[in-house]
Structures are given as C-alpha cells and as structure tokens.
Length: 132
Image 1 (cartoon, rainbow, N blue to C red):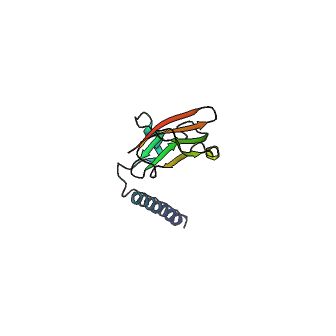
Image 2 (image 1 turned 90 degrees about the vertical axis):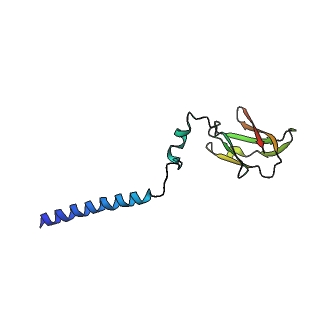
Image 3 (image 1 turned 60 degrees about the horizontal axis):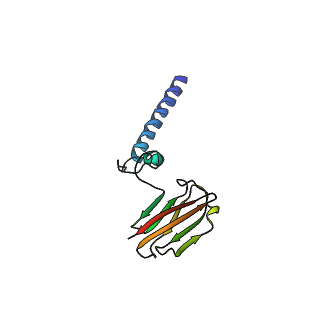
C-alpha cells in the first residue's frame, strides 16, 4: 500500500512540473527580442549616449523629467520662453518622491526654445527644450 501511495505522489509531482512548464511557455508566447526589458532597463541604459534626465516625446508633446537622475529632492520648477517670460511655475515639488518622473504638457506652447529651471535645496539645474 505504501508503494502505491509513493508512486501516486511521484506521479502527481511530475504532472505538476509539466503543467508549470507548459504555463510558463504559454506566458512567453508573443514576446519578441525588441521588447523592452523593464527589469533591467537602468542597467541597459548605463553607458549609452541616451540622456533620460530630460526627454521630449514629440508625438504626445510631453516633456519627461527624471528627478532621480538629476539627484532628486526638487523644490520648484520654472519654465521660461525665449524672452525669459515665465510660462509655467510649480512650487510644490518638495512633496514629490525623489524618484518621480515629472511630466510637462507642451501642447499649448508655441514653437521655440524654452528654458527650464529646476530648483533643488542647494542648486539650480538649467536645461533648454526646443519645441518644433
């Protein structure tokens, strides 16, 4: 009786392993080599010439600012046009986590060169953005 029970337990363990392998294989169907590996995204970006601190998406007309890549802990953002007129101000950045990706909607702005000032508690980070 023990032998039969032992064989049944082994058989059920073997079928569970096969089931798990089949489900894993099905989960990978549809992925391609060009898919982004989000788990290792930061490691893959190291050493590349891409600068993700300030990234403009021309399709959605959105500017993405990576606070973590800039050192985190921002306190204020000021966006100025070419004449140095203030177009946008956000004084509440100190409430945001250090790893925030901040989004600025550029769709209502005219074409031209804009300057961004990001104030930290000890410095000011300046960057130019071109809207085409």
